[in-house]
Image (cartoon, rainbow, N blue to C red):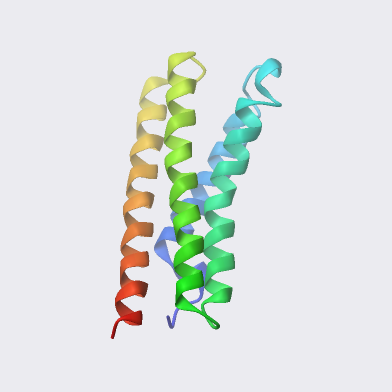
Length: 124
């Protein structure tokens, strides 16, 4: 892969959203700061971190990059679940929650597409 991970659109989108999620999580009730808020911060940042780590390891193995992308995909889906909780508990504006969930859906599709691209390079 010629691009560095920081140039990947999926990384940029995930990073921007992770910053937004972090700021939002700080506004959650105190009772949620060591549970829901912490999980949201970890999961949203995990997407970026796994793309970065996988990218670094692709120089040794594309399969390793794919493994880290699968972890990032799991974290993206986890974020959709945390947003459902925020919506159900009325912690978030319904529109904002839905928009962020849609963005995580797009990020998941982009991660999946990148993983397929890397796998196809392995079979070539």
